[in-house]
Length: 383
Image 1: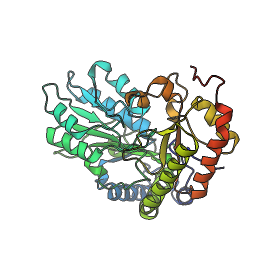
Image 2: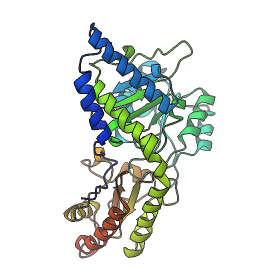
Image 3: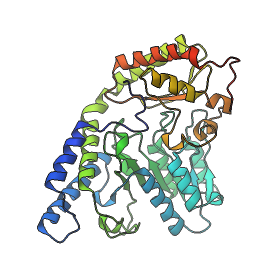
């Protein structure tokens, strides 16, 4: 079955499974226990931290292993709610993942949020951020993701992080969709980074966050006695080992094939827009992930397209898996200026490294075959 919902979750990479089983067999003890066997587990955990730091151009002491990006985002905004001055505000891109938006609203409240301007592709312009940071009501922190989970649009996160450094503001980057698809190097330049392992072939329930470096050391207390005092709970070495195996394989063996995968994606886009007239690629002219396409289809609601494609053994999505159950159109598409009736016709296609050129061709054929079945009698999209 051609699987085109990798941005929701990716299949477990074989190297991740092997690493998990090996660590579970050889190093299952609690690394916080006062035994020699536990100490050996702790050594493996620290080695994994060093390996991750090398991939990110970061430092091991800045890395905290978590259950995923949702936990990390909540930890960041909980920290800001405690540590920033009461009147300080945080600037956030309106196209962020729901885990970031909800954490901001719950921890800070709407009054302390500044919504960043985005262009028609959903991109935050560095010049606009620089102007905001230089203004009288400059935010104390900024949150902009690396790659959008619905459209695949890439943000200039490295440049934005540099703008924040010059202005003395903290920069938070959700790198969940970037990692495993594009090189991780340079992410150490952000103050805060979060990610989920299951988006790039690691196990569900695993992830990490990067915390800022301070002039007097790494003293950001998130709560808990584990993870060098930053997080509570028994460290999950098998999960961490599996995550690092998947990410390392992607970094060393897969990201080299980005150009080829971009060609396959572009060929699909050309084919589908010709064979299904009035179909459009959202943010077509922007830099996007090689694996992600948001298609505005000519007719029919996206849920019907997903069902009819699923019946033809092709799995796609209506957008973010975390927002699928919520009523109303995508907040990402709304921020980009799409009308609600347009947003209801948008389907997300997200491939993986194992997706073949033949899979893309099969998906294009499935779209064409499904088109007559999802056309309403009067061609009106209803709520």
